[in-house]
Image (cartoon, rainbow, N blue to C red):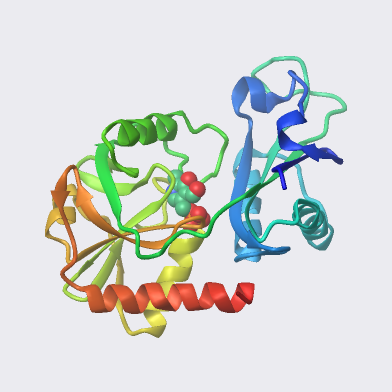
Length: 281
Ligand code: PLP
């Protein structure tokens, strides 16, 4: 099946869908979004994504507050229409369609809801990642999942040109997160991860990872770690909704990790088990 698109109630093949030029997403990236993995009509960790979406809407003062059950029905209808075994469910809300002015439009406007469902092959969990570091030039609102992703786009393109899979943002010598992932290390049995402040996106997979670690008696320290710590880490972990929990083989062309495979596998297996249980696959 082709990917499907849905915009303010109209559904069709994604490649044929259009949106109005005056949608503020076009001019300003004035909106926020979510993306999660789905198997059939089940979306993984959906309620966590919806909670984060509410946080983003609040951060941008976008008055979009549909009934949660009705909203889930709309998302589920899109998944049903796409009829995919495995897909990425994406949705975004922009502030309004209005003539271009920086300040919020006044008068009768309403937020725009855009949904896409694109086919996705489940990631091979054993596949390791190659990462490259890059300066974190982003602003101080990284906890809000806005459509403004230019630094992330540039960083990820930099990674691609370096033959790597993902870029790691480094700010003042400390790792914040990846261009579209969270980054963690295992050192001496402790999982270190950047605290959830305005410098990172509070990843849904990160949150699940921390809960799983607690259940597995793996100590967690929500403390920023340095770029140098990547090279002395026992394992470097990458997490995101579409990748799950992955292990890193190299950073900036230097081999890293591979020193605590037992603990890494225990954590990753716990995540994969949870995913399979919830998705019934
Ligand atoms: N950090 C950034 C900047 C992201 O864009 C993403 C995902 O898109 C993540 C982290 C991982 O978040 P999640 O685990 O919710 O997919």
